[in-house]
Image (cartoon, rainbow, N blue to C red):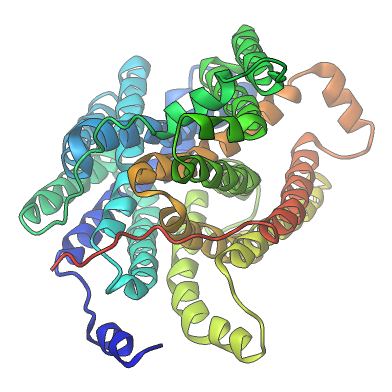
Length: 522
């Protein structure tokens, strides 16, 4: 490092507007996790009370994971609106107001299923729409002169998320039990209103990147050229592969009666992305005839990044079930009368707040001293594997429960610790990694794809749950001497461990790039 560079690095400071974004995120995350972490319990004990008891758990899990699919699907819309029309600030502000309206519906319609579902839709739209933009907006406040400080801020950003989540997870189950759903859902709505006001208060300080102007060499146009361009004698295998994906996507809509509208639409999107992406990769060099090489290489970089995101989806399959499957298991375990099963989720953000500084101050320096390079991709691959180990543990506990052995809820501390360690390695790292790898004109959309990996992870959960509704499948599982729930737990553990192995293989071949903004914002 040159002397001038060293002086610039040492003189770099954190942008003054960052506290507004961090405070906004802390309040917003309290509001989101406050309602999310009591959602399954509320539906089982109140909203679906008229349904047969044997069906309530399955109905609650299906609605919960469909809601999560929506939360992480709408980032596509938010990223597109911000990148092409309104910019990040205006998109975040207006969708935050939609978010507040959703919370108001939950509080007002706790005894009306249609009104309650409307509230869930508005929260999914508002929360999902702003999700990729707030993290990306943090990155926009940095440039080449202080980008070395960005990782610490992203860690702090993730820490404040879990600070809000901890108190929401600890308190909201008690408010639901003692004061009812109107209060339990109303308090998160109030916090979301405060979050919106805080974000608006910093409006004059933010660095705002304008929406991208129409670009003849945009990502979508390069993809279209790659798929459709063909000279005499050239194969069009990539084009036909993309068409096959579109046909399969339409065909998947016929699965709506079996898996539901949200899951079928999500499956259709996955098929379009997978087949279209592979077809584009095969024919991408043809796009160089009509587009500059820089644009073609940008698309190539994005496609490689989407493979990374796809391999992370099994992690989210496991992680999000701590708010559904793990709560159902906790209800089967022995615990003090004053302790609600859903309060166990407070352990997750508490451990995150401990593990982030521990990793940065102790673990990572120790590994570097031992000669091990702790890259972002290595952390993410290890995190997926730790999630798989957590589910082996909960599967073993479920076997004991199914065998009639009383198990204390304190045993869930071990899988929570393993899963949370995996979360810190995957999610906190992935936020900054996704931003750094995205071309400038695609940052909002790429962050949306990062969030879409969560949607696809929850899609795998819905598909797995739908498969065990078949009597033939259920009988086959039971013939093994294992309960359906325990079988699914071990299935998801194997799913994650296989994904971790593939992730490690692909990561060795991935070329890391640097797409932080150039220049100084002042």
